[in-house]
Structure formats: structure tokens, C-alpha cells
Length: 417
Image (tube, rainbow, N blue to C red):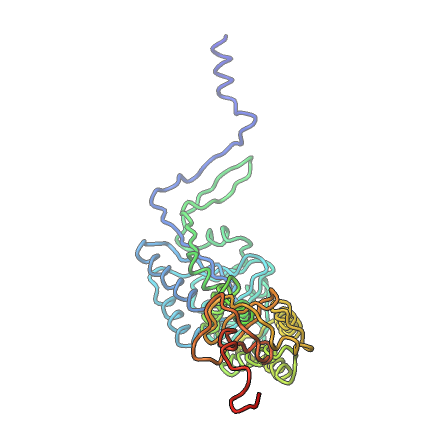
């Protein structure tokens, strides 16, 4: 009796475990699907990454290479984009594209990849722009004007996409050659992939360069770099601000080089920096500040030929740069070197100490306040040597060594005692 009860207990399903039935059995040689994320403008970094992943998929014998796409255009040359599209079309491994996740967009020159792909899916709330290249490669079923943004359902209806898979897993399940199995979980039959999905992404260095190549990031880095270097120039020395500014300027220049930047606009921004520096040197905003502000605004607005900056980015940069150069920098320089804009004649004749070598420029201490100084003498003034102020030019003191001044005769030659 006990054995019968034990047999019945073992035969009964466990109450906490779901009942699962698998049919068919998974295969060991089901292969894999390579999935990469393509987000942001198509720049050189992304284009090279896609081509490398196509090569890798061909070497490894992948079933498919899936691009998870969210891009509003391309910033590479037309010839480079054409090479990528040709590589997609010639690939031994089919290239499929899923426009997702929800809220993503495929627009501009990016749609050339959609036209070259084998299968195109689009997530709900994502959109595809109707372009000439799409109309030339896919048979449009219905009416749509070039430039229209269509949602997932309309994209499928118009034959711009093959399905409206809500998640990338469902999109992969529908691809040709992908092995799947049917599993019963809690009485519900579900289809799950047997073929493995392998996700790849840009390396950290590639992610950095791709981020830097974003239009607003490149612009802001360029402007911040110029502002920090100018700040360091008027604080006498190479410190943290100078190093950070140099790094930001290098990254900003890289981003501008990768984007369709207008050289004239870049020149206007550089002119603005020089104009601001001239008036910061005098301590009072004057005509050069007006010229610099106009040049900076115009250069910022027309910086890119085919890409537009958001008004928020422009507002932050223009207002921030203008306030920093017209108010912040002059106040900082006056505070840093204790330089009021008027009433400095009392300093002529004052004796101070050279904080470092003055050859011909350097820093001196007058009444324990640091000043930028310059000497016109051939022999430099050594650190710690006493100096006398002989004149003031803007924010710079002209000094001479006290010993040299004391060596001069009290009366000019030929004078009568």
C-alpha cells in the first residue's frame, strides 16, 4: 500500500512547477544570429563597425546579421555610404534591419540600408521616412509622399517594411533560417528560438569617437575648449583648465572633421574668440566684443551644412559664451590680478617682487597681489628680485629691476648742482 501511494505521488505533477512540453527537440547545430546596435548619425565609426561585423558574420557562418537601427541620417560622404550599401547587398550573410526599439526612426540617407536589407521590421511607435531610394527599391503599395514619416502599420501596408515586430526577439523568430521550438508553459504554447542571438556593440574607444561626432557634442566641445584655453591664458600658467580645454578642443576638432562643418563658420567662431580676448585684455567690453558676439552667433547658426543644431544647444552655447566673455572673464581677471579699471596711476613707482622669471613676461607681486608684468630690458629679471612699476598698459605692468633704477645718477648729465 505504501509503495502504491509513493508511486502515485511521484507520478503527480508538482504544484509549484509549470508543466512544459517541448516539440521539436533543440538542435546543436542551430547556428546563431548576430545583432548590432546602430544608433545616431551614420558616421565613419559606425560605417566601419557595420562592415567589420559583416566580415565577422561571414567568417563565423552566421544565419543573419541584424541591425537594430535608430538613425536620422548619415554624415559620411555619398561615396562612402554607397560602398556600405554595396557591401550589404553583396554580403554572403543576409543583412536584416529592425527599426527599434519603440520610438526609433529611420530617415534620410539611412533609408538606403533599408532598401538594401533582406527583411525590414519596425517596432510600434517607430517611424520610417519615405525617401526616393526606398521608392526605387521597394514596390510601394498605396499613396505616400516623399518626406512623409509613416508609423509601423502604415510602413507594412505601404511595403516599406515586412513586419511590425514589437521586440527584436520576435523579429529574429520570423527570419528565414532561424531554428525555433514550441514550448508549453502553464498550458500556453509559445514559440522560442533555438538559434542563438549574439549581441555586439562598439568598443569603448569607438563609442567615444561616435559620441564626439554627434553635432551638438562636437560643437559644445569646440566652444568649451576655446573658452577654457582663453581662461587659462589670462590666469597666467598652465593648469587644470588649460589641460581640460586642450582635450575638449582636440575632441571637438575631431567631431567637426567627421561632420559636414562649414569652414567659414568655424573661422567666425575663432574670430569671435580672438575678439573677446582683445577686449578682455583691455578690461572693458568695447567694439571688439560686439564684433565677436555677432561672429559667434552667425558661426554657430551656420556651423553645419546638412545638419541643424537644436535651439536649446544654440541658446546654451551663445548665452553662456557671451556672459562668460562680457562679464565673467573681465571680472575674473580684475579679481585675479587685483586690477580696477580706473585709478591705477598710484601703482607707478610701486616696488614689488618677481614671483618668477620675467623674461620678458612673467608675474610680479605688488602689495601681495599678483600682476602680469613685462620688462623691456635685455637682461631678464630673476625670481625673487625686486622690481619697480614704470607704467601700465591695459592689465599688464611694465617693470624694471630696482637695482638698475638705483644705479642711475640722481641728476642728469650736465645739470648744475
